[in-house]
Length: 114
Length: 110
Image 1 (tube, rainbow over the protein chains, first blue to last red):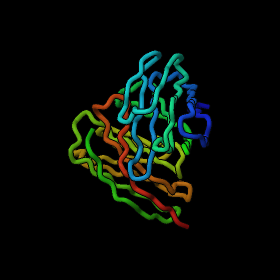
Image 2: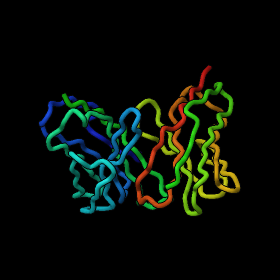
Image 3: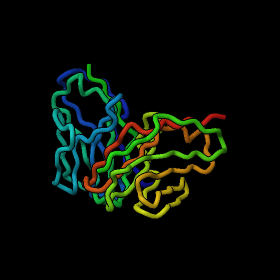
Image 4: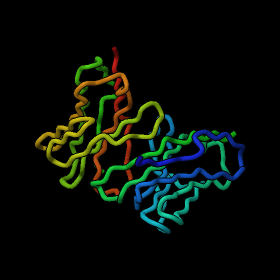
């Protein structure tokens, strides 16, 4: 089954403790991205990757890092999480970034930073 | 990408057609109209997209006006599981990025 898998689904952590949210897709997609969703602000893109070893900032990249060493994986790294990074996070993938391709989203990771 | 405008909420009776409108009056010729939905904090789910012609798939139909300034997503026989936030997105210039607005909260009631 074609899918985007995120882990963990829920995470509560303390300020400053490094964490990684994993994202994996099994569709051989080139384009992957991370979004965060906050009440009243909608979904905003954090980082994206057009292919292996090619990543770039989205609209809200501060406080996050990503890497794309393999095509299927696109982890999101919070080196020193802060309470304002408490949010619902989604990973997405598509065959390419062109306008005629649909995106597939993971089931989400709800992160709470205390 | 062109701005889209949707009503904040709509109701629909189970078994009836749900018609969700979207205004995109500034859409340019190469921008596609996409629809996604999000069921209760799950990941957004792709529904359908189109450029000029009407489109239909197993989930829904997309009707785009001839001037392309508005469109309607039609769920032909709404069920309770179709209760969700529906997002209309005009997508043209932004490589890969989807710009989600506030969407329409569709509530399907028995």
